Length: 89
View (tube, rainbow, N blue to C red):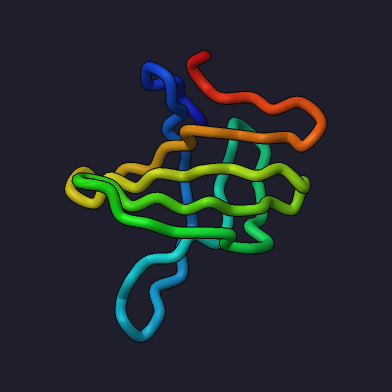
């Protein structure tokens, strides 16, 4: 279930932990809709979150944010190619 958290959406994410034990998102659930991650476009660390820019199987581009301390994932941006949407705007 996706829930709105003041400009972002809390989401459920399934990850793959490789040999370094660093979690990489593979799919997430947006409401009742599962979104398969087809490609990791970019990744970076912020002061208190890890970010992933991904392309979903629905051709949309998402920015996912992982709070490692709380172990909580959020979607902070979605671009559906034809109509860019930034959550919370």
